[in-house]
Length: 277
Image (cartoon, rainbow, N blue to C red; front, side, top):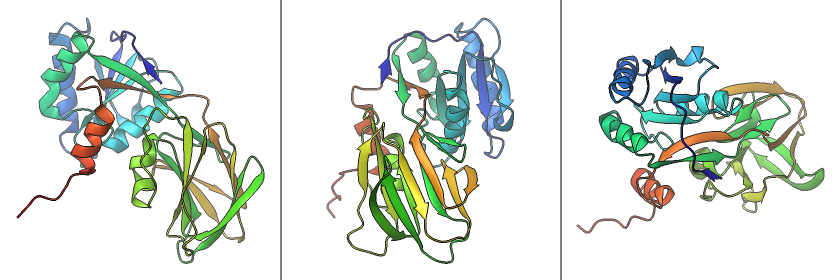
């Protein structure tokens, strides 16, 4: 879902990832630039990723996609928009590079942006995800048999290393590398992809966002469900995944009218023909 509303910048927080070199120094630069641009009256406060405040109106994440994912999960509960500067590797969700700071400020001053609400997931193990939930054994020594139920109805049994339950936003992450399709982020659906299945008939499944997904395990060993590759919870026998009641709110710059496809081409080289020798 897309919103065209003005940002409240007066209580902007800048969140940096201390594990990424140079992120704190750049956070200081962003804070100073926002003040000098007259976008804010007071200098935006800087916080480490493990100390994110709640009383803010807008959050800027300095790091990589992992930093933005953690910020988005935290601020989704508070309906606070998040924007990301990429200082990591791929930077698929993070919108801008450090050398684009002036460009970002100009876009925000001209209100040349949009706010997108992105579907999130929650699990009965008490975690939430913007990209995906991954269900697998705690120890990856052997494959598992995972029984998939949708709305309490049996769908199939996967013999696999695990299952990825993904949002459209996460369809270009782990799910894509496991053979899942690319889904545009505005769609209301959930993607289910087996990890290294041991049968050729095992294929990804796309279901409506209002469906209840249950994964039941056949063994008695320990299992875990990981949200966005970061938040790990443990469970026994079964776990339930549904749409989260809150959405992540991302600020996206209007670089062109087809940002999603442009990023597919630029970041993942999607559909790019090989160059002639």
